[in-house]
Length: 187
Image (cartoon, rainbow, N blue to C red; front, side, top):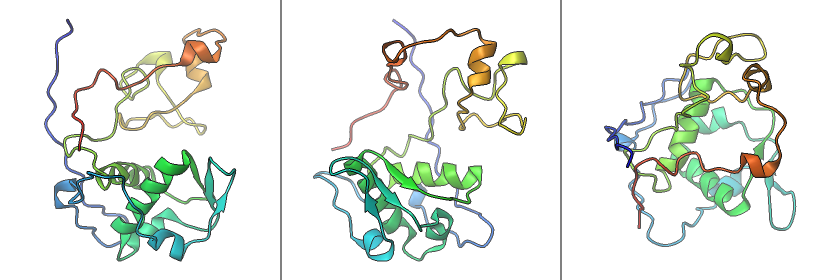
């Protein structure tokens, strides 16, 4: 049996994005403990137009800027609605975003905490594709900038080629990244 690792809770830091106000996080834990299916407040759809991509899957918000959502006085309510829509529609597209990596990480983590993710859970650190790789296996972006943040997983075909990973089919790629990580079910 593999040894288990206990990780201390990591609260979301209060955002300090230029031009935004600090959003209270209450230790990042949501005061909304889901016991029944989550219901959207409707604020997101009252503020921003959207289009359904198919009857059952996908939605696009062509005009929303997620950075502006962070500045909104009801940011948490809008982000919670976004999380609920993502869970219902499977995939949601936000076109032409102007976000920093820190803003993307904050939004991603906040989406989970506002819908019942345990306070002890933070952003996933991929066990292979992370910033601790060395030599040819280091991950760089399209501009050649080295990724130094373990909470950012860079998907790189160049890295796969350097590791001499051959062509694969979908069956070879099926997996669940975090099934081995400790956590608990809310509800």
